[in-house]
Image 1 (tube, rainbow, N blue to C red):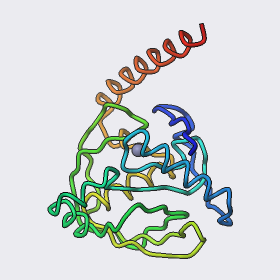
Image 2 (tube, rainbow, N blue to C red; image 1 turned 135 degrees about the vertical axis):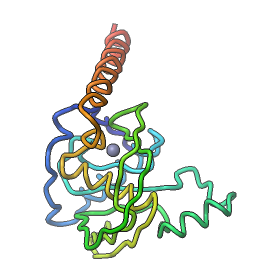
Image 3 (cartoon, rainbow, N blue to C red; image 1 turned 90 degrees about the horizontal axis):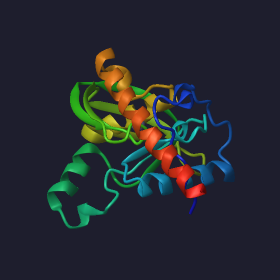
Length: 192
Ligand SMILES: [Zn+2]
């Protein structure tokens, strides 16, 4: 298990446009494992390689990280309606279809403690490669469609705060600066 550090917005690494993975190798699979490990550790439901300052087109999603669907039939039904069948890694995702509209309150591990409503497409069809390099398709609705668009945005150097007003973004920027100062303060204390 390897945990990696998640870049906090507005880290310039988050603006980088990720490059396609030319060949799925053991290194790609290690990256996928680290993405899952880091995402679960930070209690997120999605993570893109860009957030680890690795500019490669790889993302992971798990809408049921605590396994609640096994105890909660309503949530299991909802996941099924969204087309979500379990933890999934997408390498070189490509959107084939996108339609409908959905407003969803989003959060991001790169913008901790902040949630804002963003409008996305309500249905997407995405083709990607799996950890073996094989092509597969996902047909996603609801939160699954939102997560795919949110994570794919990261691969294009975009963060959900880019959809907000400048005023809101400035407030969030201040919040992140304070958070960073607190974290840097803790780090230097532990060194001393
Ligand atoms: Zn994010």
